Length: 227
Image 1 (spheres, rainbow, N blue to C red):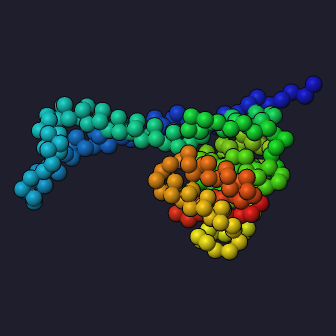
Image 2 (cartoon, one colour; image 1 turned 30 degrees about the vertical axis):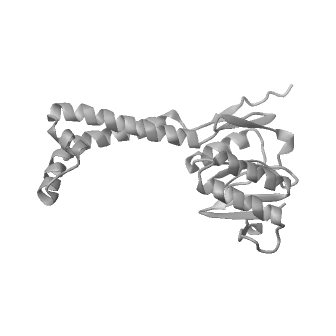
Image 3 (tube, rainbow, N blue to C red; image 1 turned 180 degrees about the vertical axis):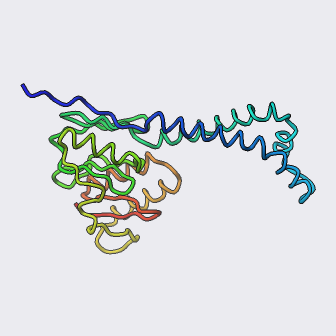
């Protein structure tokens, strides 16, 4: 019997998140020493300063340091929470991959996969027919961890660029090459991205995928490829 490698879970390391919190606390400590001179400078230059700044400047240093350190740590925790929420948790097993993101998840069997790679800030799991089972945004710092996990289990890792990079075209509304329904879906997805409606953008992407069109984002532009 062949011994299988144990599953590997790739996520933002807790240490990275604590670094953000500690940096926030450190900035708070620095602010405790700077807030007085800054408030005095603003009062001298503008004959006034914002209320919260004057309140912080009025605190004795022995209180300002812990209070502003706590405020900075809380701000850092908020940033760390957003960072964590924006990145998926990827479970790489011998027979399948599970990607958890945004309160949901996607299970993909090993037999369904022909290409695994990162494309810009996206992790992409693609089938033999060119269909994308998963395309989700990941922090660039996780690329090496993902590569190690996929290669450890023998998945077809294709590197850090789409093998079909040259086949993508920037979407321009109503240009030939796409039917009206495809253009309508791309318009819908563009509006959803602009309005930060992730669910609607994902729905439009899935319908485009069902019509044989792969779509990705580059800056503020959508790019597509016919599968």
